[in-house]
Length: 450
Image (cartoon, rainbow, N blue to C red; front, side, top):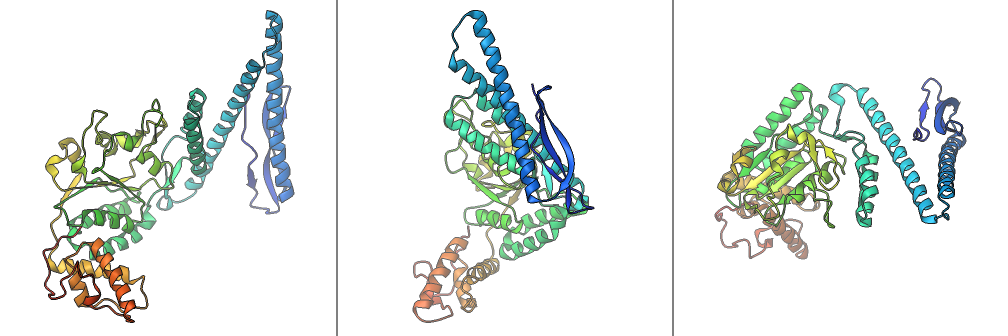
C-alpha cells in the first residue's frame, strides 16, 4: 500500500512574515510513494495556489499509476486464463483502489487536525484550556469503513455527512472552563432571584461551580433529579438553569413513546437507523457539556422493544460515561462532561437503580411572597421587549402571581397589546385577560406554578 501524506499545510516563520515554510507534495513513481518537501518560499497568494496545484497533481499521478498497475495485472490474469477482458471487473478494481486512497487521505487529514488542536491547547495555561478530547482522532474512520460494506445508499449519504461534520470539528469540544466561572456564578445569582423556591438546587450547583474553580478544572455537575407536585415550576427552572450556565439544552420528554434507541442510537440493521440524542448533542455540536433535560422521568414505559431508561445506567455514571458508544455509527465518545437534569412528580415510579444515580431535590410550592417575586422577574423579562412602556405596577404583578410562568408571559403580551389599543404606555389590571384574572379581587388564588 502506498504511503499517503496529507495535502500541503502552511507553517509560517514568525521571524519573517514575508516568507513561510511549505510542505509540497511530490510523487516518486519509482518508489510509488508521495513525499513532502519542506521549502521556505515567499508568502504570497500565487505561491499558495502553486502549492495546492502541486499537491493535487501528485495525488492524480499516484492514482493514475495505481490504475495503470491494476490494468496490467488484469490483462496478465486475462491472458493467462485466455478470457476476454471484462469491463465491470476492471471498473470495480479501480473504484476499490480509489476508495482506499480516499480513506488514507481522510486519515491523514484527521490526524493533522488532531495534532493541530492538541498543540494549540498545550500552549495555553491549564486555567485557560476550554476544550477536551471526546474521542480518539481515528474514530470517524469507522463511518468510511462501514460505508464500504453497506448497500443502503441513504445510510451511506448520512454517514458521509456525519463524517464531514466530525472532520470539521476535530476530536475536541468546548466546555465551561475555570475562567468562565465568574459568569456562571452571576447567572446563578440571577436565577436565584427568579426561582427562589429552588434555592437548595442552586446552592448545590453553585458549590460544584466553586469547587471546579478552586481545582482549576472544567465545570462538572452530577446528575440532578427535581421532584415535586405538578405546578411547582420544575421544567421551567431546568430550562432557565441552562440559560444561566450558558449551555445548550436538549429536552427528552418521557411522556411520549420512546425506546433506548432515542438516547444511544438504533441498530444499523434497521432501515430507519438513527443516531442517538447524546451523540448528536456532543459529537455533532461544538460543546461537550450540554444539559440533557429528562422531563417526567416517572412516566417512562418499558416496551417489548426495550427499556427507554436502560442507557441511563451507563450515561449517569462518570466512569462508564467516558466511553459511550452510539449504536448507529459505531463511534465511541466521552459523554462524562454532560449535565443531566431530570424531573418527576412521583419518585416511587422511578426504578431504584436509576434513582440512586441522581442527587434528588424535593421542591415545594412557592410561598405567596416567592410567587410575587417570581412574577416580578417574568414581568421584567417580558418588559424588555416593550422598552417604551412603564414597568408593570405592583398590583399587576400581584394579579399575575397565581399563574404559571408560561401563563404570565401570555397574559403580559395580551396586556401590552390591550394597552396599545387604548393609546397607553402603561399597564392596568383591566388589560389582563379576563379568563385568567379575577378583575373584582386582588386576592391570590391557590398557587400553581409550572
